[in-house]
Length: 190
Image 1 (cartoon, helix red, strand yellow):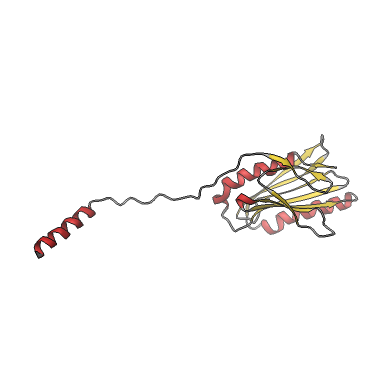
Image 2: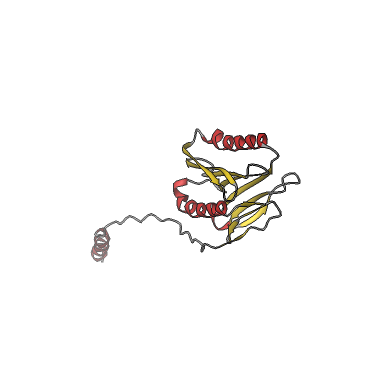
């Protein structure tokens, strides 16, 4: 009886030892991208733009900063912070443009692999500004400001709401960046 049991155990071990170990493939989270559709952002401020239908525009300003908003991309846990400031002259405009520049470069120059500056100049809509694309381990991959050069100035900064590795969220960022660019292309000051 012991011999039969021992032979049975050895046969079972022999059977399992012949199988080849196959490593498990890496698993990536499945991201479901919503269809691209836009509607006009409803704000009681002197500007308008188109936003994705899957985003929510939440005010976050106080009595002084009534036209500050968060454009929340809920499915992706990301936010575009928008800060509108009325301006009265070129000196104030220069100061705001310099502040926007410093907000990009001062905290990120050590961590960014590259900061790409792109000028915005749309004379048909009377808009001017700058886009800053930040590459590397930075808190924000995208910043911008827009102005009409006379009365209006808005600054935007995009963030993921949780700490991320940019290479891991690059497909999501690329998807959302197209929406942000669409907002800039449809942006108008009144």
